Amino acid sequence: MTPTMKSPATMTPVEIDTILSDNYRQSNETGSKLDREKAYMELASIRFGRATPNAEKWSGYQQAKRSIEAHEVKIEAYRAELKALADAALPYQNEYRQRPWLRYFLVILSSNGHVHREMHCSSCYPTTQYSWLVSLADCDEKRMVGEYGEKACTVCFPDAPTMPEYAASQARAKIEADKICPGSGKFVRRGEDRYYRCPDCDIIIRPTQNQNVRKHNKPEVN
Image (cartoon, rainbow, N blue to C red; front, side, top):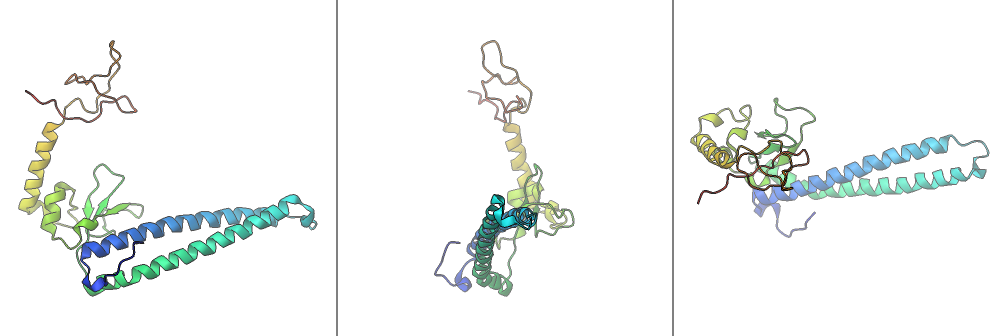
């Protein structure tokens, strides 16, 4: 976690959420390492438990014992790291509780992910993954809708479609969509000249792994 000399009370919501976002990322990574070490230790314990009464004479006995001890050391280290991260985050969490501000979360791993007010929207699932839009901390809904338009969840933001910013975002999205060559995404074969060409605009382009034309803009007309 990046240290700072500033008091949370003097920090902006963006500064605080940036620190918390990094803290939570590190906590998730450490938590995954902890779970992995626990699984490894369980496997080593199973092997250790299969030892015979003369286990000390079995070469695998000592190896399993050392493995368990090594995993125990790592587990305790990861637990200490998680506690340190939790302690470091506490002042910033308390500051948010003192003066709560608007936060926004974008669904990831989806081509049509929506922006939500929180990570417990009824339109999502327990397995839904989010990206914390820390740059939008404390901004009003109009600014968010102006930036994300149709991606604004209408369960979290029922007034979004009626906002002027929503229509402006749609207009910008249409302008950007009109720039895209209709050949984008089409299957393409290598031609006789050994180059791949877009079937619509005929430019030479490297295909995707599935031999589809990569997304690209229409050629500029001189």
